[in-house]
Image (cartoon, rainbow over all chains, first blue to last red; front, side):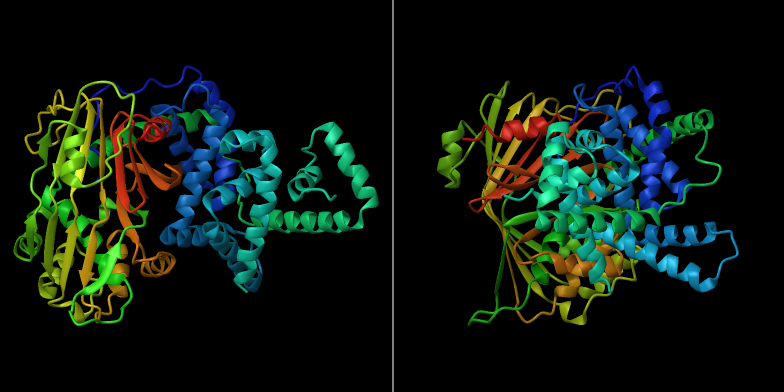
Length: 174
Length: 388
């Protein structure tokens, strides 16, 4: 089904300011991905993947590069979340990462909560999940709008709606 | 007049312009209803923030430092390019028959998954008709690279499918000839440069008889014995009718081998700067109504890489009687829903090659459209908007 049309062309040149963008956004992308997957190592891999895509297939010149990077890394993280097998890995990794000797019941409770939040995020429409993650990462409305390519004045409405959906889906799991 | 919810939300995030912020504050000072709504919004945002906070496990030492991260990036870049190249070669090696088989399995799974309907005198009924399209990410790892060596796969599709009609597209002189021959209200894009060509793929009817033992052997070859097929499937006859399709091509569509292609195993021909529009009425699928075939759709989704729980959950979300499932190799393409021609369509953009390609699929007034070519999503939608 997919077209076989293609042109043979040289790989796209990396954007001229790639080094500066990598420096500026490396940790931010890790943090954004980590908000979703809760696994620092995996979050770094997802951030690297976003940079690889940016390097090899840069966005259009008039597109905000930071917004593109944020949108891409949250897409990658949410896609990873939706894969059940990987989600189980994240749950286990997070449990192992808890090195402090804590009450077993507390650890189990936290793990269940993480699973519930993961399921909720995975069940949301992709844009709503991205919106919540980006806001929680600390992006301003203008930055979120650039990432999601919507008008900044619509972010308040979209966020309110996404939060209502999150609450509904989260509570349905009771 | 109360404050819109979006403005309230933005107010509590201090994201409103100064003047608007002040007028919202003034209204809240004397409107108890908006105060209450504001409290609900704040509480909800606070709870969700705490819940998301529970997910993050930022390491005490922070993330990898910039220098080492940059080196990891270089390694990942090289690995990614190698994987893409290997994937290309692997996909090129999957013979046409296997892809056709996969496509037919798609149609079969959808057909046999729709609910039983009331029987009439004839045994065949239960029509499937495409009204919408849904993409499923396909994990190529779920299809072993040596599948072309499967004698069972070859037997499955050579012995059990009988096709009447169809065949190679017939070249036509112009668009009017295509309209006349197809009885379709053929619509065409405007403003595309380069040569134009028109052809018609004649109507075809394929009848597929399920040989369950053979199908199970194929699954064994694919190392997917975890997928369970019901016994009632054996001997089921499914008829698939694909109406006449009109194919319009624009630009430099003469096929040529890619420069530097030395792999004799590759049959990949690469037209350059070519836009193709295929249109036709929906394929229809008929199958006996007494088969309990919902599980077959789930089995197919598992073949595409979903877990049993995911397949079951996905299957519950679609209308199997009217949704065409399109498998796309994961990591090779991205897809999204878009508004095209006044309806919701599916846009696929490829990252399989060192260039951008698109495929735009939609259904309007009972006609399936598939628009493919070089370029990004904006170009795809722009071309589609010129259809007349």
